[in-house]
Amino acid sequence: MTDRIAIEKKVLSENDRLAGEIRVQLQARRIVALNLVSSPGSGKTSLLEKTIGALSGSVRMALIAGDVQTENDANRLKRAGGKLVRPIVTGGACHLDAKMITRALGELDIENIDLLFVENVGNLVCPASYDLGEDMKVVLISTTEGDDKPLKYPSMFRRSSAMVINKIDLMGFSDFDLMQVRRNALMINGNLNIFETSCRTGAGLDSWYDWLRRLIAAKRA
Amino acid sequence: MHELSIASSIVETVTAEMLSRGLTSIGKVGLRIGALTNVDPEALRFGYETMVVDTPLAGSTLEIESLPVKAICRKCGLSFEAHDFIFICPNCESGDNEVTQGQELEIAFLEAD
Ligand SMILES: Nc1nc2c(ncn2[C@@H]2O[C@H](COP(=O)(O)OP(=O)(O)O)[C@@H](O)[C@H]2O)c(=O)[nH]1
Ligand SMILES: [Mg+2]
Ligand SMILES: [Zn+2]
Image (cartoon, rainbow over all chains, first blue to last red):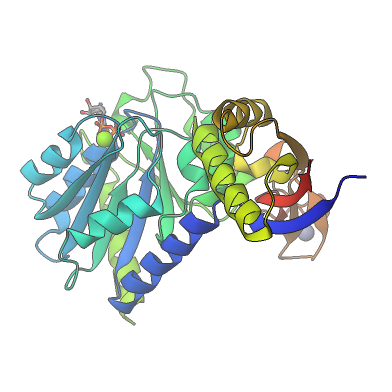
């Protein structure tokens, strides 16, 4: 007879604990925190460059840019005018975890900011499991990817609160169907806020900025 | 592949449990994994078994219980299984619902050797 010992422990309980601490720390300062996730190349860094350009006059922002090998994205965000920017080089890991965010936040002066962006590693699978203490995940998909992406990566679309469909300027060069991607995403998550944007032409970005402003206002209320 | 980092979190947790319970070896680790977690059981098993070689957990195996995704409709209250991750209420067709099962990533039990 072997003895079975009941344990009942979450595997990622240590990550969840740290994420909880981050959430408390951000909430105390009334900071809106968004975790941006997508496949590589969908346009996370481009969307952040645009957002810095448009909002840095009125919104105080900090940005953490995760990458597997380089600090290129963090450097792009600084060049775009980002003042509080920290890179996280994961050295191979396919996702950011709460411990990395805790360390990055320790190196940023977040005392007076309104909005924290975390650009996650380009990957639609692994980042879904790791809570970073964010208010919401925002998933990006671009029109050069398949419109069945939500069905292939349901976990990420389910756990996200908003979906940005980027590169709409390239519509027509592929068989990407906007209505189809919306339908697919909404079957998985009926509460998704959906934006259609082009970081090339600027189309659709105003409603994205408005949504960010509303989140910040709601946080302060 | 996050299965490797998940395997290493399992190893850490089990090692701590063995220490606190005075166990010197272990036969089986029971896991409960929801279908919404994106964890591939075979990749996880492989990562775990590779990782425990030359540790006190050597020779132990994972017993994985897979849980389907379930949700409860916020509109009509029906509990339903979200086959193929389609979260549309089969009764009222609302897409407003809450996941009640499928996000588990838990260690359920240990079996001493
Ligand atoms: N045509 C077009 N190209 C874009 C758009 N957004 C980003 N890109 C390009 O797509 C590539 C990947 O963008 P990047 O922001 O680095 O993606 P990330 O990997 O998600 O951070 C870059 O060459 C961008 O210039 C867009 O809306 N339209
Ligand atoms: Mg990037
Ligand atoms: Zn219903």
